[in-house]
Length: 378
Image 1 (cartoon, one colour):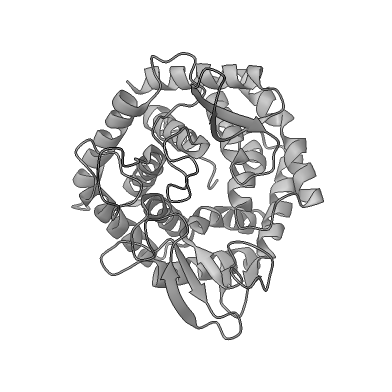
Image 2: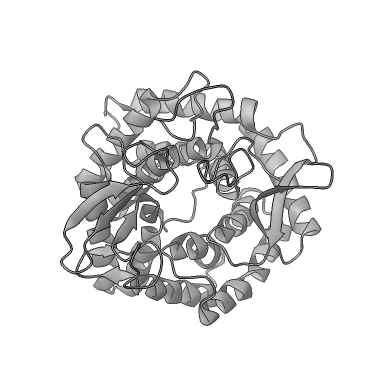
């Protein structure tokens, strides 16, 4: 099952690269016939790295140099974006450069890619706010709305800093990533293992103000993709730091996610949203969690009593994604997973292809098939 799904994904990715040279997939649109498709454009959003990362996964999996050449050709685009500071007033520098520059360094040991990855890590460090002890999520320093705001997504940007620490030995990268992960654990994760999407702090004194959301159902709800970022992100912070609190947090969040899944084991967009006919799913959240569970299973003790439960949940989720949500059998589809959601309340991509969903789906598949991991660590 996994091999067939990977072959289908690689064929679709190759066609997309050939059909849209020099472009990147953005949130889905529709073609002239009303069929769902990606909206292709320049490297100006937070999501382009997922497309490049898929190329590296396919190259590692099958050795097809078409994917290597396509990914390498994009490196100058990422370099130009960093030099010109194009749409980088956010924390998602890790999403962009871990899956492009760092991936190229990891696979090819390309020194130019390594240098770009380190430059990107330095750019991310500029978002560190010492008074809060956190990396500011969005906007410039002092922004009246977002100046003291963190979001759970940032846990997947921290591996860029952990990587930079391992490459250079400079403790500043590790210390900032570690401190941000600790603050996120304290304020974004609730006692029952659920999570806030965002949290606000006073920019003058660092005092906690309140939890909130940007894309969830309401401020106190559990946005499923945010929960997914936490599961995978805290597991990765444990891999780098060996702080057992991160492993425990990832496991608690995973239990909550699994216990709140619907019958087909693929999440709705928010665990607190009313489930009615037409309620949006988020297949991308379940794909991220699949990668998080794979990470957890690798890090957990062999005798951990939770292993069997997590392994079973992983198999159910991935089987459902392949059988019920993948575009296998739809040869002209540009995306790999149907029924992803982006910003349901905002009416943006409530039921479409999501390139990050495609990436994590493929990452989980190649990891389960050949043990090939993503590019969040060395």
